Image (cartoon, rainbow, N blue to C red):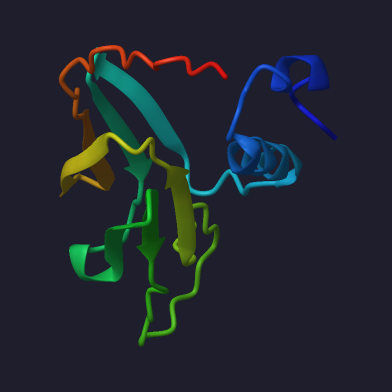
Length: 138
């Protein structure tokens, strides 16, 4: 399935890998576990909030690998066998990935009352002046 029409693609030069990535993402079936929110706090600041009930800081990791924000949770080894009458809190391991634009930087991550918050800031580059190209003739 192609999510962008070929007539639109014709006006972009050098974005082949980007459009291929978008088409791959359109086909991926991502797990909805764990629940998360994506917020825009300001024009240049974002927040990802992930529900990680039952996970401690030492079982969670947040890292950026080549413009990919990866949040992982290790399995919680429960050394004592518990007999649950109902177990509704899923504490299974997970890996959540978020593709970051090249000018985004993770400022910090914090864990508070079972909620992992990740603050991301957009680094706004200085305005680049236009480049004028001399036209050669024969």
